[in-house]
Image 1: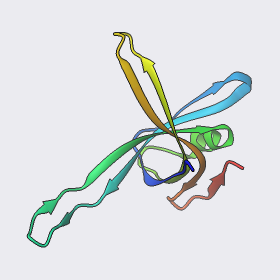
Image 2: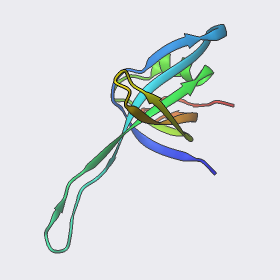
Image 3: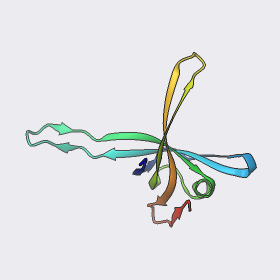
Image 4: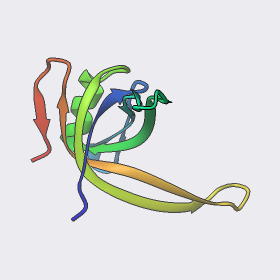
Length: 115
């Protein structure tokens, strides 16, 4: 099973484009943060933030285009996709993306399902 669930904040306004036959595709960066804590011996463990590339298609992308902005809190449910490519210098690059199947806006707005 390939399933990812994230709750995080949008790092920049989403990029939305339209491909063949008017299909919308949105790309956004989502930051998830694990809060820091203090160990029993007094050692401070700082916050840790990870950044995720999220891809949304069709109706989800259209909702993102209208309602999602930098700083918004989202719940994303989807699956991991891995791709590779060679950059201009011939270096092999690896990309990890989350292809969203479901998105819920956690800023008091309504939720949206891909189905």
